[in-house]
Structure formats: C-alpha cells, structure tokens
Length: 549
Image 1: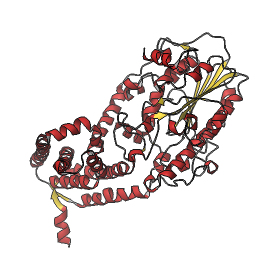
Image 2: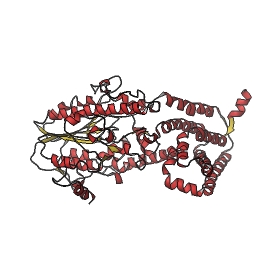
Image 3: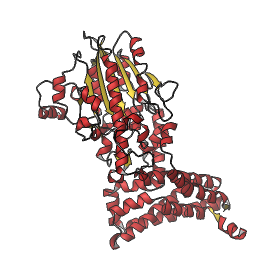
Image 4: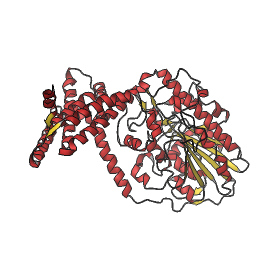
C-alpha cells in the first residue's frame, strides 16, 4: 500500500498541473456546463463542440498554471487555486452568479457580518470536497525536479502544447466558437477558475492604477445660491437590495408599504440603478459620471456631490448600518452603526436600521447654521438571510425561509421573508419622516429614499445580485425611489412632481437633484437631470422630450 501511495504521489510538475486542471474542469464547473448545455443542447450536432469547450478551457487553464507554477511555487499556487475555486463553484452553482471584477470588489469590501450571512453547511461541503481534500493530495505529492534549464523547457513545452490544442479546436469548430464568442459572451463568465483568474488580474491592475491617479476637484465654481428661505433638513436613505416591484406603492398586490401610504409620499415607479452591487451602485449614485461613462477608477479619484455640498456650506453627515460608504463619505463626517457600542437597536441577530435615528436630533441641534443633509445607509434587504433583516413582529407573510441556503427553501418562503424585510423598511422610513416632522418649525424638511440595486429571487434560477449590467435581469436593476416633503417646503412644486412621477429615471439624476435641492449654483448642474425641476403643466410626453434633448 505504501509503495502504491508512493508511486501515486511522485510526479513531475507538468503532470500535477494537468491533473489539477482536469479535476477542476470535471468537478468545479457544474454552472459552466449547465449554462453551456442550455445554450447548446446536447444533441448530435452540438456534442463534439461541448466536449471541445471542456478541452479548450482545460487547456487554457493548463497554460496559465504552467506559467505561474515554478518549482517551489507550484504547490502553493495549486492549493490556492483549488481552495478559491471551491468557493467560486459553490456561489455559481447555488446562486447562478459570476465572479467578475465587480464581484471581486464586493468581496474585497465585505465585512465579517455580511460574510457570516453566506456561511452554510453546503458551502463547507463544497470547500471540503473541492478544496481541502484535493489540496491535501497536492500537498503530499513529491515533485520530481530537474535542472533549471529542463524545468524551463518543460514549462514552455506544456504551455505551447496547451495553446496549440486551444487554437486547433477553435479552428476545427470555428462556426460554433464564432457563435459562442459573439452571441453567448456570458457563458465564459462561468468558467471556473479561468474567468475569475482573469478578473483578478483586471481587478488588481485597476486597484494599482486607481492608487496612482491624482484626486480631482470638480465644480470649483460651486456656491450656495443667495436665496432667502428657511433652512433645509434633508434625510437621504440609501436602501439595500430592494426591488421596485415589491413596493405596494408601485402596484404590488401585497401591502408592503402601509406606513408610507399614510404619509402620502411620492413614489417613482420607473427608476433604475447604475449598478447591480453595492460596491458599484453606491459610488455611482453620488458620482458626476453617469452610468454610460461611469468608471470606478475615475469615481474614486474625483469629488462626489456630497463633497461639493459640504464645500458650499451644507452640513453633511453619513450614518452607516451597512458595510461602509464605499468611499463616498471618506471626506465628510461618518459614523458606523454596525456595532452595539454605537447602535442602541442591536439584537443577538442584527443591528437594526432604526438605531441610526437615535442621535439624529442631537446632531441637528448641534448645527444651528446652514442646511443639513443626513445620509442613512441601510442594511435593508441584504440577502441571502432575509429572515434576519426584520424583528419578529414584522413577520406578516409566512411561511418564511429561515436559512441562508436559499436552494433548500421554497419559492414562497423566500419571497415571504424578502417581503417582510420590505415591510420593515416601510416602518423605518415612516420613522424617518416622523423625525423630519419634529423639525418643521425650524426647517423645510424632506426625505429622499432609493435602493442601491435590486435582487433576484429565483427568477431564471438566479439569486441575489451582482450580475454584469448587460445581462442582469430587470429585478436586479429596477429599484424603488420615494420622496416626501413637509407642507412648508417652498422649493418643490409637489403637484407638478406628482404629475411627472412616471418618468423613466435612473441614479444619474441623484447628483443634479441634490445640487438643485440645496440651491447650489455651478456650471456642472444639469437641470434636465433634476427630479424636482418639473415645470407645472408639462405633460409626460413633453417632459420625456425635454429629457432627450
């Protein structure tokens, strides 16, 4: 037995790389081949092409690994790839998500609380079977080594043969690969670990480039307009993972907004996000760059609208019950509410969003001059543990999925848990409005709520969020947006605003709406992208035409 084990575990580097690559293609790519077979049904015409895809991606992986594995780095690199690929396989198989640069950015910015929501028995099984056990085998392999020259020649030979196989198969199945590349771009996003390795390289390159960019000040001409009006107190709530179609304000058959309905808010039912993840959408919301030209590197190196408002005299405060502000609040006052030390509404399960309201009045009273903008960043409907996002008394819709392993729950129970969390957001927003009403003697007050992005709840076998925008379903992009203003708010034509609420808008409008709301004068301001800039008497068609100009 010992001799058999010895013979089994003694091999050269090239053999070990080929074995690891075959293992990953065979056992770590269920999502990849499931999506491939859905696009190219496994019949007589397509069978050879599907097999060739396995060989092509396997050969590409062998080529990549042969170039980064050299002598003493071979085992550490292969073990790292196996462990990371076991995590990637779980999330792609369970949620039908992909590991692109935006997803890696999410991972890099995820805190312990968010990460714990994703831990499950199924994840551990994936890690053990696809990560730990094959890594133990790699660890015990005794690698044969030769001279440096021979090792280099072996690497070149393996990489050349692998790339040659890729080219040969692409040429043989040229028509199929042309369709695969042009019409089915998303399919290669599921290749594990090939695609996330490429994404990792892009992410690292982007991070390095961002760190070297000079910081740019914008709207240098910005000044507060010399208008004689009462002070303004605006609370902007950045929601988390809420869908527009789950707000009863927008026509959802379940009553998920009973409190907001009483408050006579204005809901904008045709509002769209500029990203499908918090790491992208939150900076984009406050950025001068619209969705069409948004770039993470540029955004990180450029002032946002909160910087401009603070520079013109607005008192700006960011309170966070989520992971963090994703860099938006780096230059303004920021307070973290994810710990019991700061949040009085923490339980064993969760620090509730309502805890952010505890000291609001104290902040308002401490700033006797100037307008005030307070941003509240919610935990909201953050998944997959929707059942943890609300207190038990808000469990109106039952039965409820009581686990973060959504694949083990019925569609009904997942949706019930999600809708209960929306119900709690409704309660939270009504409490924000109550806080604003307390201050109407001294301020014109207003609420502006919008979610960062939406969420997939099993439609098309997709869960959570974070898919690339070009293939993300509507559920991940269509977000709720709500406004409320006190009766004494003179700067808003509420009648005209209600008449124009059905306009198609997106998060590009937030930057200019906030500038207009606080009467900031600057050449960068675009009135056609100000939600509140609605001339009375204009029809929906006229407003749409104006927007397109």
